[in-house]
Length: 76
Image: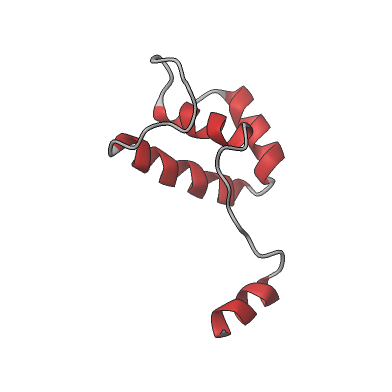
């Protein structure tokens, strides 16, 4: 895994736990046959592809800003 990509991805996501979850989910998708969301070098690994997708804003995610918002959304 490229440390430069990790640093840039952390600038986008800001929470390392969320970044780990995003990357691991995307790596599973790529390894199961999903195509990358961008043109990549054949030498890049799945984790580097996932990080590059995050850095280049190809992946979107929603995260509540506070635990109270998450609890309110779950309560419906």
